[in-house]
Image (cartoon, rainbow, N blue to C red; front, top):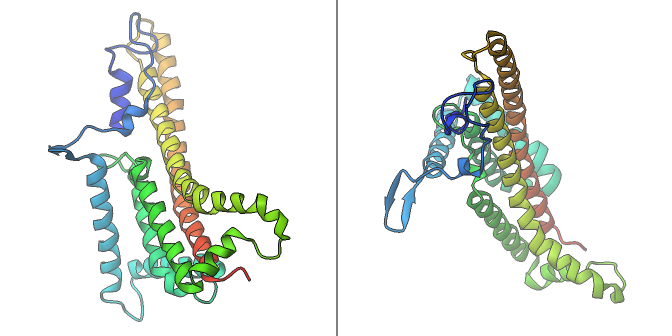
Length: 282
């Protein structure tokens, strides 16, 4: 259960749903995504996001070092997990979207997938996390910019600068008068909208999902009021609170699925963009 939600539900005083004079329900706000700095030094600060990002690097590096440093012909349980992860990204993402050259980009794709997955999952880890790192706009933006620069550099190196940008500016097989309309659309959609939506999709899903979980948690604490003056109302409040907590746990499970799916979607789109840069349009 999120400590943030508990604080938000009770920050206005004692009481609850059926307590006379008790505080009104305080729904979670965007303040939960802006934890106070842990350490400040000049214009710089270490926040909860910084700590969780560092832990993400440690977890991902530790996992791959532990599973690949001493690989065996008959794999251990964790080596099997690592191999399944690698094969999944290679066979379901890299090869189908990039083609025969896809294998060389698997290290990038699998790194992105596991990094994003762990950063997302901090949002449901009690005590340590309870805050998805990707709910901070800076993280998805930086990831999307890295991918944006990478696939454009790949396109220029594979096709040459002129041919690469020519295919973006002037779609092959289109009568030249239509370029007056299509060229601006292609420039905006490919070079501007694409990286923006790549970042926003990840950020918005993690932001909305965590806010929803915090709302259910706060509602559960608020409605749990067994000490109400009327014993019947106190019992009703416990039932209401139970339903809120059931909703919280149900949406937590759903959020874990969404967190995994968003990591996959980000990596899949990355592969699609690289595939378009590797192979010329004509």
